[in-house]
Figure (cartoon, rainbow, N blue to C red):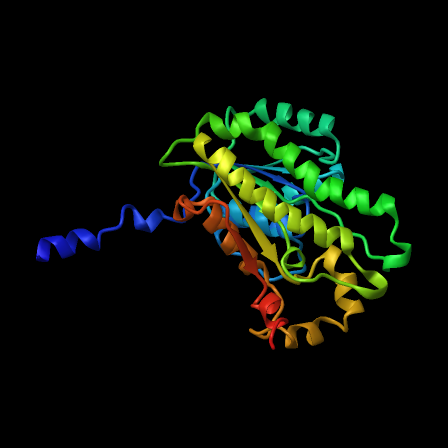
Length: 304
């Protein structure tokens, strides 16, 4: 019995279960925000509190957790270059880790094809793809423009699909049953509950994020046999360039934080830790999930 109990409590390489040592990651929309924070975490696991967006968080976390290469891409070259300079200057990232700037407009298939070709010049595989590019538009129902709705749907859904589709060969290159590649899609709690309504209603954004969540589920089933697991994250309000205007319209950060069950808005470590988990060996059997990171606010609004 003693030997049986001893066998049951053994965990394989548990000390390194969250390590991303030597992994190669690509982050779209990664020049600022949540994406940048994630990139940083992939290299060292520790982040300082600052104003951020999803992209900044993602890049930061990936580098700090041990990734050897993190490719940063977004439409603006200057933003990509600035993000990479900040990431490469991190004092606690892996010594050989590098953030690499490749500007591209992921809304255009031709640009995604060019991005894949550029990445392939310096690596023969990708372990982690973080599909984080996105846009929003706020306008009341009666005057909500068709062009804006279409742009949001194209960038938040169609370009996400095309990016994953075109990176699939590189994702599959080194993927195995015991070490699958990872696709992480940035969705939103707006795709789970009701999004912003009224004068600045975000109909397209809410619909697109619901679609992104379901896209992740479909890709999980289709790409799983290729040893590629796909999951979505659904952040609540995080201080970011995209969210700040909406935060002020709804009464400011203090008012919004008071409405969240855990009493606060999101912080960099909240996204970084989740992204490192989904990119690491700790989550290799998690596939098709959508994980909310909002302090419980999406469920708190549904109280009877």
